[in-house]
Image (cartoon, rainbow, N blue to C red; front, side, top):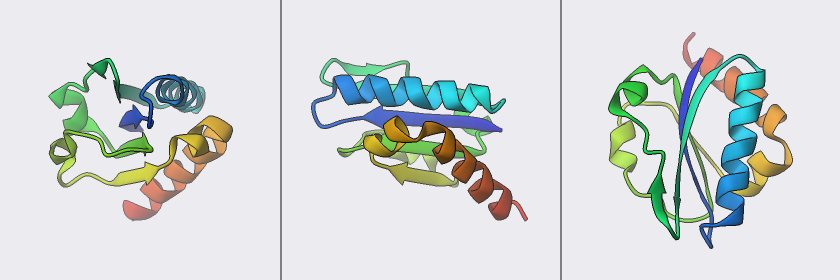
Length: 106
């Protein structure tokens, strides 16, 4: 599965980067391709290339604040969750994403 996403927290520092790290590790462990950009106090980092968005099976927005650039994901399955959820249970979250995406493709 191809996953793209955004991580952003209220302060734009710790939880943003922890959420990104946990998402990437859990997705890669499950055998998926993933690219996560961060939006925080130091701006946007690791912006998702348009070609990856085009190939994406799902978009994950792990955020506690409003994120910019949502229009890029028009027509894509978008799953929005708070950063705490992916920080506390990243592997279970990825399992749920797999289930949601497989159900949507049936």
